[in-house]
Structures are given as structure tokens and as C-alpha cells.
Image (tube, rainbow, N blue to C red; front, top):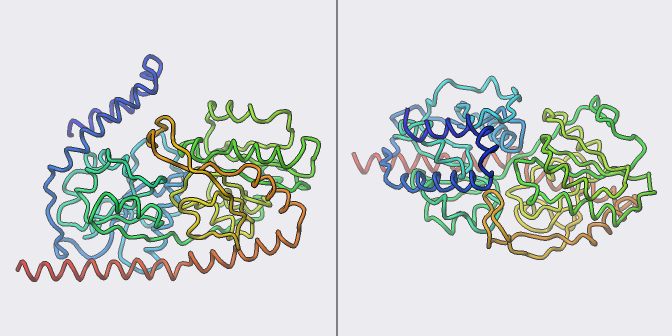
Length: 429
């Protein structure tokens, strides 16, 4: 067992006790420095070059396919794309933190006990990639074509993570927004492979199931506390709702779905309630079918995000004929426009202090609250506008993010990888 793994395991194990005596900001800073030091060391690693004949053709999808959160759903979407494309593959389950909710078993039959194919697709974000390398071991990388599937939400990719690129052959992302940020940092291939999106709902998970009123026009805001409340920005949606509707208007309501009971987030959000009785919080960790059904049970989905690496919830809402109000900036604009959604004007504002991986000095969007309130009123009052927006959104996403289109891109890319690998082997032979 290497020293890095030992230290990381100790930090994870003792974290609940350490935060009682050491400020969390100090712990994050120390961990960041330690991770950067080890990430810089990756430049010295000598990965054995890709040999297509060393392992059998196919793909090892390495990540947390059981996760009950956005990154887990992302991994599952890729797994289903690989299955649909009939590319030989298997999921090698990798979980960085045992604290993560990992209860989704929909990909259970795709799991493999060890990587056995000659292409790796690491579904592990860049901020965790160094830990993954030292935990999995160099052997996992050797003789394989190594691809990382990374998400990121800002226009600038952090310099601290640059060392991770040295142990990769190429990088995939779900949006051109992310790809452009990474291309600034490397000459290696950075390929955009959008998600195909499916969002089947089950009518048994109706409003009554979630404890929601059946006679109100409901707006929905969703976010995972692990994704940073500052980035998802549900506070602005609360303010827009309050501007659009008085507290006496009980014909409308707002659902705030949080993935996890983060008490600090809850305390912050409750400051915005101001006596409104028609704002409903759902904090339970839901299965994917329950999440889809909650989205389908709402009338409108609202995302006043400051930045998105894709915007999966918005795409899922559009598929379920649920009109969206969304910030007109970052990756979601690649499958949304003003013809199919209520797109919000914004100002780019500086990040004033480090927030998780989002560093001071970078920029993100501040969406127009007054415009959002106006769209809320229009969708509530104008039935024809509402129905037209819902139908156009469904048709647009079906075409832009359909399974056949996405899997064709994957198969085309893998064909080129194998051709390049075979040509290199011939030249070296």
C-alpha cells in the first residue's frame, strides 16, 4: 500500500474528529496543497504506451455507477451508451469516499471484477484523479489507451490539476463549454461526447407520494449539496418566486429539492422564506426513477445556476414536457435556446473567495432575478405559451441528445483510436 493511499485513508477516517478541532477551511487548504504536490509528481510517472494487443478490445468504464448523485448518473448514462453501441465493456466500480450514497443497482449486471480491456474510460473528476491514480495503481494505466471523462463548470480549468493530464492519452467531456476550457491547457485530444438523456417517470410517484399539493402550479429547483449551493444558486430562484407571487397566492408553490440534509444550506435558505407557506423542501436521497417522477410532477423547472458543466436536470425536465427557466450561460446553452426555454440574461461576476474547487478571481454568471420572476408569471398565466414551450423543448432535446446520435460519435472515436494504435504498432515493429 503506497504512502498516498495510507494518508488519504487516514484523512477520510479521521475527518469527523478533525473538523471538531481544526477549522474546515484549514483542512481543505491542507488537503489541496497535499493533492497538488502529488499531482505534480504525476509528471514523473512513466506510463507504458498503448499496445492494442496487450489486452482484448473493449472499454473499462471506471467510476461510481451506483452513486445516487449527478456524477453517478453521468457514469450510468455512459454505461448505457456503451451497451447500446455493442462495444465490449465492463464497469469497474470505483468509489473514492465511503460516505457517498451508492445505492443505485441499475448497472449491476455490467460490473467486472478487474479492468480487462485495452481502453480505460475514467469517470473520475480531475480534482479526485490523483487519488484515483495512486489507489488503482500504475498497472491499471500501463499498455492501455487512457481517457478521462471530466466535468467542469468554469471557463478556466484549474492549473493545480494540470499534472493529471500527463498520465492520459485524451479527455472526453459532455459539452463544448468544458472542452474549450481544457483545450486551453493541453494539446492532447479533447473530445466532446454529450450525454444521451432518458428520464422515464413512474405515475405511482405522484405529488401525493412526495407530500405536495395537487392543486398548485409548482416550480421546481434542484441541487446536490456536494455541487456547491453557491454554484447552483437556489437562493436567486427563491427571490424570483417571491417577486413573482405574493405570499397570499396559494395557487402556486415552489419545491426546493436538496440531495442530502445539509443543515448549513437549510439554515441559509430558510432566511429567504419570509413567511411563505407554499415553499416545500424535499431533502431525502431519492432513486433515479423517483427524481424523474418528481421532475415530471412539477410544472416548471428553474435553474438560476452560476455555471453548468452540462445541466442534466434541465434536459430531463425538457424530455418530460416540463418548461425550463435557466441561465443563458455555460454548457446548458448547447441544448437550450430561447425557442425552447425561458433563457435568462446575466452578468459575469468575479468569484470573490475560493468556494470548493472554484477559485477566487474566476468568473461565473449572475442571472437576472427580475426577468426570472417575469417568466414565472408568464408560464403560470399564459397556457398557450406554456404548452408551446413544453412541446418544443421535448422535440429539441429528443433530436439533440438522442441515443443513436451520441453512440455514433463514440463508435467513430474508438475506431480512430484503434486505427492510430495499430498504425503506431506497425511503425514501431
